[in-house]
Image (cartoon, rainbow, N blue to C red; front, side, top):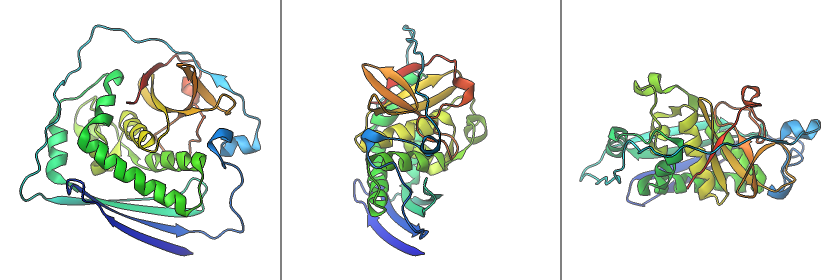
Length: 277
């Protein structure tokens, strides 16, 4: 087993610091497939015939107002405190174990946690575009990309591993983690809490994929939110046709979901689609 340790200290606003680790399981050869984004396939589809399914979309209603129209204006205190968060997970192909550590300001977390929520999925882009969260997510995306590059992953594998990282975060419903029935989190909150529900993990994954340069959308289903990643028209799997492009479904809760695999509960359900940012 080979271990690679990289430590990176980030000085953007002196808010965050990262380190990452790879443990490699030495197998005879790399798992086949998943070489380029244009020829994307999944584990299941390597061994079975994939059936491409286009899912229906409905438009949203107008006439509502977001619950919080403030622009966050966090000011760093003179003597901030920090908390370290470490994430460990096994790569999607079972060849590596990854570790990423980060330090997040406690005061920043408390500030964002105190803000009112954007409860409509249509407004979730506000969680992604916020400046401080954008900086944190960019640094995290760079760390994940660095790990993937060290493992020789291509574009489709990097997308899969980014989703795998988010899927590895513990699922905890809003009432349990926050005391509210509906409490979408900023990416910083999800990373600090190291848990969240479907909307939290979808916001985080959407933010990461955008930072990595991939087109993505929010997919709103009955009592559920997921992510779609832009793919070529011939990419296999369940997809949504939005603004002339195919977006493969990504389930963000729990490990093991391949890209393009839609849970059976939503096979006949219509979806509302929104841009991530």
